Length: 210
Image (cartoon, rainbow, N blue to C red):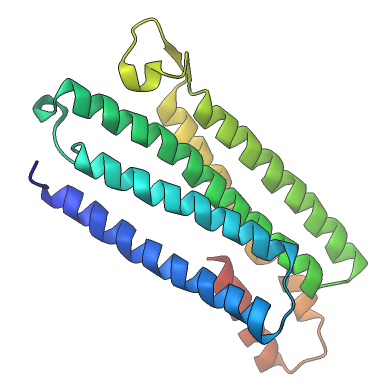
C-alpha cells in the first residue's frame, strides 16, 4: 500500500521525536551512571516511560502500514482491524509514558528541593499523578467491554464515550503540567540568589516542564 501524505507526516514526526527522546534518555543515563555516578529511582522511571514510548511509536508504525491517514472505505477489513488493534495498544502506552515522565520529574524534585513544605506538596502531586495515570491506563484498556470489540467491531460491545474521555484526559494533562511547572517556583523565588539568576532558574524549570 502506497503511503498517503498524512501517513508520511505521521511517520516523519513520530520518528523524529522518537530519536530525540532516545538521545535525551541515553544522555541522561550516561550522565547519571557514568559521569556523576549517582543514579536515582527517577532514572528507572524515565526508562520505563521511554519503553512505553517505544511501544507507542512501533504501534503507530503498524497503524501506518495498515492504512493510517487513509479513508476507511479504502481499507480492507483486515487492515481496519489491525489498525484499530494497534491504536488500542498505543493509547494505553502513550498515557502510561506521559504519567511516568511526570512522576519522574516530581521524584527528581524531591531530591533537588529538600524543604519539608515542598516535600509534602510534591508527594501530594505524585499521588495525584500516579493515581490519575493508573485510572487513565485502566480506562484505555477497558474502553470497551469486551475489550476486543474496540478493534473487531462487535455490535454487542459496550464502549465509553471516547471523545469525552480524550478531551477530559487532555484537560487534566494540561492542569498537571501546570502543577509541575509552578510547584518549584516559590522555592526558587526564596533562594539566596540574584534576581537575574532566579529568573533564569525559573525559566529552566518552566522549559523543562514543557
